[in-house]
Image (tube, rainbow, N blue to C red; front, side):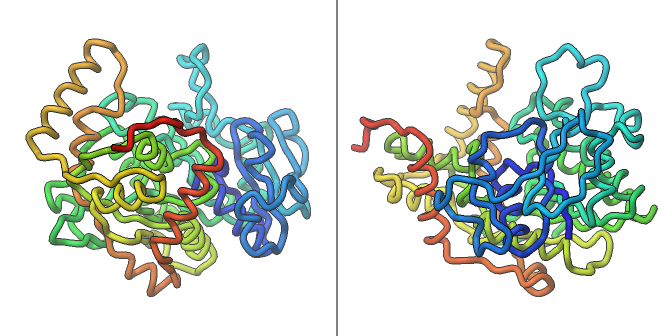
Amino acid sequence: MRILVSGATGLLGNNIVRQLAAGGHTPVALVRKAPDSEVFAGIFAGSSDGGFPGETDGIDSVKRTTEQDSGQSLSGDCPIEIVESDFAPIADEQANEQPTEQAGSEVSDFCGGNGDVLDQAVRSCDAVIHCAAMIHLGWRNIESSMRVNRDGTDRLAQACLRHKKKLAAVGTVNSIALGSRDTIADENTPVGHAGGQVPCAYVQSKRAANEVVRRAIPSGLNAVIVHPGFMLGPWDWKPSSGRMLIEVGKGWKPIAPRGGCSVCDSRDVAAGVIAATLKDCEPGREFILAGHNWTYKQLWSEMAIRMGKRPPTHTLGPGVEYLAGLVGDLWTRVSGKETDVNSAQVTMSGQFHWYSSERAIRELGYQIRDADETLDDAARWIQERFVLPQHADNR
């Protein structure tokens, strides 16, 4: 099968295209601009794991299509194809802004027509896996987040509906019900459980993206929605969640957040997404692809061991948590820039994003590997590719 994958340079998307090629499928990677050659290095048709990691220097075969090639066929026999196109064109009022991976707010103006590379790519493929997203855990950037996550998803959903292609939309556990220290959430947990998610830009825009897909299903869209937990693993080029490993590796962090997350391997999630794409599921079926429900103190301790640092000894109390968020928000108002320390992100770090993947295990054959393997491989990936401080305090 030919499967279009948006966000193919990200942690999940890159694992997906590698597994698709290894399984004999042709992944078509949708990128805004051509990435460095190493991002798709080691992708060989029929290889067992996509060359994990750093076992080869080149790409076996790549075919590239750009906006200028919009009249050409996208079909071919290459292990991977790259389609260069903005995820969605920038709306007129934003034409002079710095280009980012954003979707235009006037989605309908950009759908269809021979000049739309994205529309042609969807038409030429058998299915679409939509991984691309803007992640901003804060109160600002709501408009940008909506353009990318909601409007971009709408554009792909409409193209899939128009050409009768299956869509596997990648959501997030942050967009569904919240777990608690005493309760593990699943697909049927009420959305307001445990006080509900923090309505930051990411949460709101991903919920809106889910609704875009759900609303298109009665019109005939064949779609599933998958919700990954906190992913770690190889092929984290930017990095994304690997940033946590980098921060822990900079020096001793004596105090960890008091909440928790569901730690999963990006390779397992990629396999789950592919299974949901290939399986004949009921349209609208949703799956949680999570993992080991750990506190952040436990996760940071395991990360610290692998990064050669001392584990944390305490967790952040709610009072200090509140003050940290307050100071962060004050700095945002004074400086005009929102940092990672803001009340939305600090509050989220005190919640328990704990989930059950039983539905995915039962219906998709989803597997959750040992956390030690995930953390070992993720730490090795970060250590081999990113510069860490040589004299970080480890007392």
